[in-house]
Length: 136
Image (cartoon, rainbow, N blue to C red; front, top):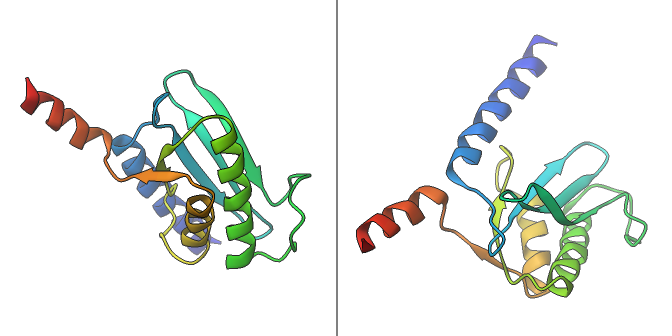
């Protein structure tokens, strides 16, 4: 049990480190991902307003894929999220991996979103602040 608690504590520390570097805006909202043993959940968030713009998961009514949790499932959830985001007029998002390694299911979810026309920005909040200071 202690090992599991340590694992959760390390993920939360990584999550906070990532969240200090990125922030979703109205123009480039944040795509946040949560994965469990039973499903994968993704949502696009505007941090300025504190609103969830759209979301997708394996428990959605529109999701018709298998209930198994693998790369194919994550890709289908990504495609569903990408369609919803593009229909809401979004073109670019910032990816928040939420402390998880960018591997297998997260990569498949991102590829599914990209197939539907959603683009990902790799610039974080600190890089944009440095750029803005340099321009002034």
